[in-house]
Image (tube, rainbow, N blue to C red; front, side, top):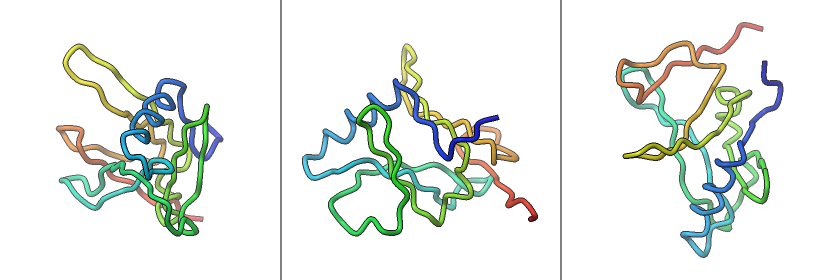
Length: 116
């Protein structure tokens, strides 16, 4: 079981740095959760510009900086951010222990807040 809040693999760190470099004003990448799809949520990544980052948690690995809005932290706790390169496509992948279901196409997921 992963006890780290967020784990960024080495290959994902290289890709986060590469994607950050595409925007000269970016200070990192933000991973958010969008309400969408047939299962309710999807992952979204976007550049983070020099702005108020007080609402985000900051994670760093091998020089790659990933921000996560604190409001989404509970849905992402324990997630492993990785990067997959295939013959015809490449993308970030997320192994999220908080997912309780995925839609048939794999584009959206469901999380359930644990009862404490």
